[in-house]
Image 1 (cartoon, each protein chain N blue to C red):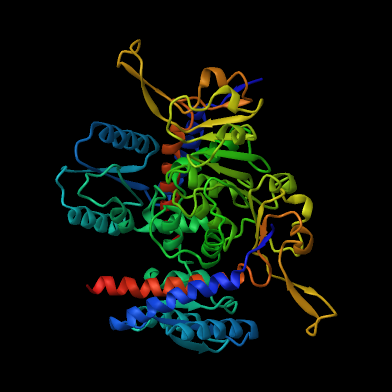
Image 2 (cartoon, one colour):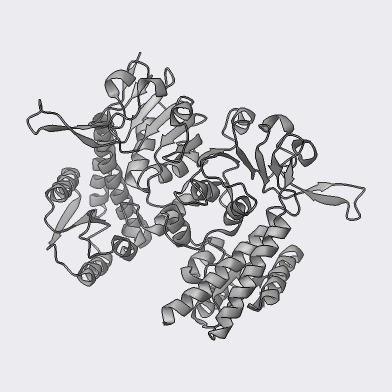
Length: 295
Length: 295
């Protein structure tokens, strides 16, 4: 029986659990707070920040949306980050990507207090993750791990093949899944543009993760019968039958691959909703940590 | 024709190159300097620090050996690190591991200025490596990459199978070898105690790296004919025919595996000598960086 893994449902479960935790934190006098910084007027970025604000408010997390003009000097953003680092009502800081070209994104991320880096992008958090130490995990890779675990496909003892070695998904996910802990402990193979024969490696996967950024890249013949297929891709393709003239598809040829896979995540509605759930998880954890520090 | 990869020779080449660079730096008024901190009186640790001191002095690198008693309070070590961070004549700081149990090693490493972390153990350097950004690379993994490249076995396009997911070798090496650069760009599989059938995965390797810590773990039947075998293991085994009653062996059953491998690193004399060469490389780079900063 083929299973379509419902990311929306699992994300909703996580949010419901977080809502309880937020409630308990408030009883103890702490309201988790997140600052979302938007620089410039890119409509997609504005939409993302708006979605995060809405998700926070639904859970009772305070959200402070801070908008800076497109020509905001780098130093002004860095000083804003300094002030957010100091604010006691803010436990998580999100700098919406991409930033205008005159601002060094790496510099901005380095400026965030690692204890408020709920995106898990600060090199200290990435390094602690690599070391297997407690840290804020990057949201999308952590979301994939959570999606697998909660849908009954624990990666432990499985061969996971990851297609794509990107900084945001492929590399950190490979690290996360290979760690010695009950949510991981998988044998991991990382493939990419330098891999001579991706299909033959992909066919070995018990769990195949596509994070390559090419619409319909994973075809039916690349999937072992019964394998779990996780599609991290988000590609806009032309579709004149759609009102917008385009639609969102993943890296997997869903309609054909679903006939051979044992389980598969759809796009949209698979990994996507998990990312925000993990950012919220990190924020609540950051607020809890603050409580523990005070005690 | 089977090749025994000579780590001593390649390490000597790297040191000869570094000696030239040190000479040039001195002409510009900078003497690279390293501080080696030894806490306690463990004879093996004292030996290692001594070896590093000797290697530095041979290259013209200033070495300051700092010895603290076994009961040195943690705060005293942290303040020592602070003072080394400030010293202009010191470009690299090594804290010899293991530290006495009352000192938190992670805390000590975090205290080192990342720009002087020539061991590449600071989470910031590990995180930058994971992000594919310039950083000090951890010495043993970087040494494996250098050994492969300089012995004519570039990992590019190859399938590398790493046995062992340790923090010091396996995990960072997996990250390094998968990056998109001419010294890496390999398809990487990371195996460990959670892998159900290691031999069948190992046999797929074009390059097999053993970093598992078990004497003679890799047997002939685990190696594809013609594969390159890199042995990172250092295990002391009993040997009554030896004057000391024991000898050093790797994770690979060298005598039998060499009959099937295309190339193999011996233990001792393979990866071992590369580690110190890479720490020296990092130190010279740290000193150069200082020069660039001044300009």
